[in-house]
Amino acid sequence: DPFFYGSYMHMHERLAHRYRTVVVPGVTSVSAAAAALGRPLVERDEVLTVLPATLPVDELARRLADTDAAAVLKLGRTFGSLREAAERAGALDAMYYVERASTDSQRVAPLAEVAPETVPYFSLALRPSPLAGATMAREAAATPGLPLDPAASGDPGEAVVGPGTGEVVVVGLGPAGRPWLTPQAQEALADATDLVGYGPYLDRVAANSRQRRHPSDNRVESERAAFALDMARGGRRVAVVSSGDPGVFAMASAVLEVAVEPRWKDVRVRVLPGLTAAHAVASRVGAPLGHDYCVLSLSDRLKPWEVIAARLTAAATADLVLAIYNPASRSRVWQVAAARDLLLKHRSPDTPVVVGRDVGGSAERITVTRLAELDPAIVDMRCLLLVGSSQTQVVQRGDGTSVVFTPRRYGGLG
Ligand code: SAH
Image: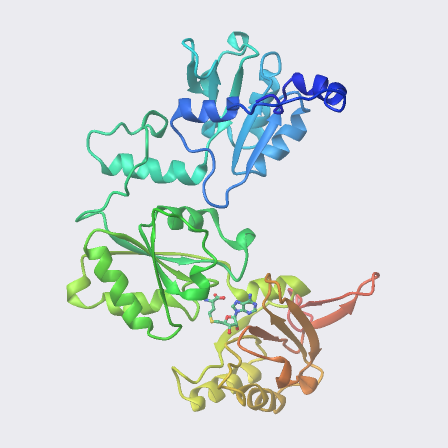
């Protein structure tokens, strides 16, 4: 394409304001190389980075490490530094070399196998879509007669489903945002034929026209689990999504509880971890969970309040830091004040409390306060509370911000 590292653009800059010019768009070498490889370039919310190999090695390595897919142009004498950068970025094995794409003398090879002295200017290096690559490798493996090398297979086509291929994979999306979604979780989501979960959580997964989505209400957990297991038994690959970590007050237990029924004993179930909200909130203020802590849900929907009260008291007397999930909801409003008052019977009014709301999301708000001053009005279902121990400190930094941390040593030991 003339406007893609094309020399015509220099003429254009000089002449276009003086003469009538028409630029006819073309197919770039990047597209031609992806077609030659038979590998999708970018899928869903993946990022493609286009790099000239003339950049310094450090810069190339940094950018290769920071992208999903990449196209590196202007090879030739620069090939040595590209190879070194790919190696440093840990990307060498994922990269391919394409020479004279779409011509009769087209050549395609894994980048690592290319001899530098044979590389002409008309060549480029490509790191195709990691997500599509994972799906293609898997489908090639599940389809007898298809070559196993994903680079050698063509159109990924219809998802492979059938008896024996089904499974339920319970995936944690993290508390918010793509940076907190692990590459492993992303791969499992891309690989699924069906997505099951609470509607707002499913909305966080990038659209993929190959998949069916089955949004549901936030309750009906066991029905959702049975629905997923049933589809998996029929050969579909079902991802059940949870926010945060799926094992923390979420879908992993719900699925496993239902999966113990004899009719589902042969359905494969996997659980993939996610970043849990407590860790995300803690990181925003420092390291309040740096020593022993306990995790509690304040919801009395699935356990009686007496049990919650007994556990709060036990944690308070054991001087544990507390991470409190589900502190309130629209219909559950009195629990935060009740918990605060219970804790105050055993803990100093000065105990640091962190309220993290929608951490990582657009409505993020972090409040650092004292236990005695904890105002239930600022707490809703999108909040998580961290209550310090007797050792937890709030310290002002030079720039006026404060950090909260619980020291590594307890009571001056060590
Ligand atoms: N499995 C999830 C927890 C589900 S319970 C996890 O591991 O994080 C739902 C509770 O998680 C919410 O009431 C809130 O206490 C907490 N939570 C989830 N995402 C959050 C976020 N982005 N910011 C603050 N709290 C969050």
